Image (cartoon, rainbow, N blue to C red; front, side, top):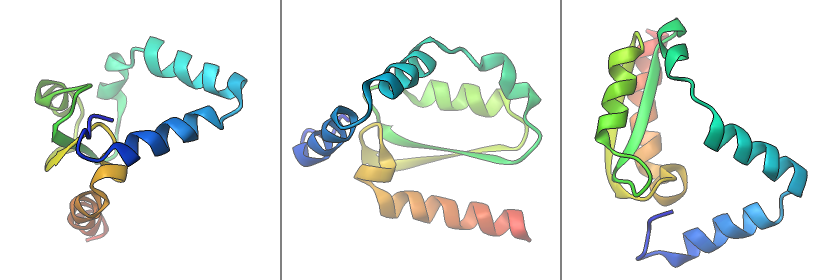
Length: 107
């Protein structure tokens, strides 16, 4: 997860993965690590929000910028937090990013 100061987050995620049916985990891993959907970004027709931690060990701001440049109606919110799973490491930051985005969509 990349949150060295909060090892309980990584432990919880590892426990979650380990309790998953192995066949489902294998399919999830295959899709996650072997899929390349960059060409699909231009096909999106709905507004989208990319939420990313500023300190993410697995990705970086260049990737978020790529998504924004290649996806019509995409916005980026960079959280002042660490890790690759902000919904776990910074749930308040995720909620605070989602609220204005969703309010703008319903206006």
